[in-house]
Image (tube, rainbow, N blue to C red; front, side, top):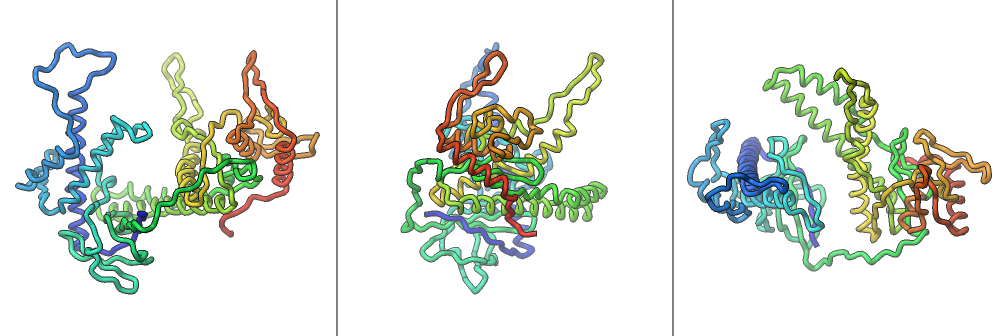
Length: 465
């Protein structure tokens, strides 16, 4: 079994300067290898719908790989390397060899995901050249227990190659029996952090049993951005949202305005930039903490299967299409309101939450399954009728059952039905939607019981106050 423990460590001034210089060299080495691969990619391929009129006389260049690029390191270490655009001289001998080799491995993985894809066939976007803010991690891949020199009550002293002993605050003990396999060092807005990858072969990996989904052991989750609601569940519960960006937006804007007013390169601008970075970090950490607490709350309900919407986040946060009249003047396209909605989607970070829920549920032996949410918000869950045709219609009063049906909870129940295979099929005939399918009386009674209970239940809260 493998695990990763993260601690904060406190390098002295000379060690900080050394680590920052190492990051500069590794960033240059990363961008150089990536540029070499892009050069090969452009010169050794032809578009499907095009044919080159002039073919090259020379043989095609061999594809750069991890081993061929790693072999350049002994040559680069013989002399100082001059950066073309700035004239800066870099000494590759100052950096540990395993750190530079890991940079080559990062480039290889990023480029292979771009042209080949991962194990599931999914491809990543075109890799980007790293800036100073992007490249922040150094990895020592040959770490072992011998690197630990001293352990005290709340501190651990680790010797890193070519850097020396660093003082690490040990807020939790390393489990007995685990050995260190790899060490990574990361620079963040509030200091330096070290990640220890530890392993114990005697501890078996957790393999969850296959889950058989039923009505009683499954929950549907509907993503909500209305008012202060974050999620609606098929159990009739509404979980509140945190909105960390919205709550800290005014403070963040004040810091950003002050920073922009300062002269570029000045000390005051750098101080404000650091303060702004810490504010962004606070927002990101509070959002992550909220996601974990929400996921644990759902998993503690005892459900073994969670059905959520398979949302197209890229499309949901896309800008509206530009509108122009015959004279070329721009017309209102509703982007002002859409910008606020886009910010709300990004602040909620449902993609990150569903990933977190999948991780937490997996450790508890549960599964998380995404479902295409087509028509789940429109159909009345217990009568298979198209009711919620307008997004502004948040509630529906059913005279027959004397019931006020909440739109979001109704959609969550439909997601549960969709995951269990009892959701009706929707067909469009002559421009109208028709519902085809039926439901047994037992399921109808359970849905009505849930909706009646939800109509009397207030929104629950994870945080007091």
